[in-house]
Length: 260
Image (cartoon, rainbow, N blue to C red):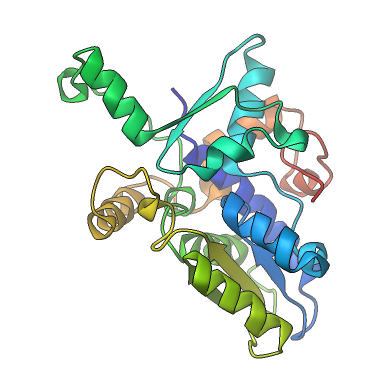
């Protein structure tokens, strides 16, 4: 098992570098987040003219699948999460090489029940592979916060900071895009998530959204590393992929990039 938040770390680092590159004046802006297929599809269908403002990043799910397949030839990859839209994302032509199967939390719970497996009875294998930034992706505003703290860490002297606005839930995402088109926002970093509360509010979540949000936040605070650049596993993984410096993330066109 691999924790996808490790790859959220890498995508956070990539988006922080993209922000540094794209935001040069107070009028510049970019749209995120790469992790939500509903948000990306909404931009594609309703506002295709805005795609040039979306960094060409794959989702953490796709990044994880691609890296696993590179490091373990012949591996079969299965993504588990609360999101139904991930099933469709995994079949999109430009990223279909990454994930073989997508299961929801509910489907995994049903499998465990059928096999009479209680995860609570299984010894815990503690692996601290992700930073605070990567762990908060699952909640609304998490991506914005992750990119902001990472940008401050790698480009502390950048005069223009992340000024974010977020929308969660389809109606709010549509409203945010309409506001942008009508010039009603001054934000330079626009984050959208298709589910209320973020991924924790996914249709196949097993616990209350507020409880899940609190648990994600608690888990993030316990991280050994505050940002991806402080995370030795990020550095090691990138080097194993032949990416020697963080700046080379922007040059990568095979693992972490997609063409929207």
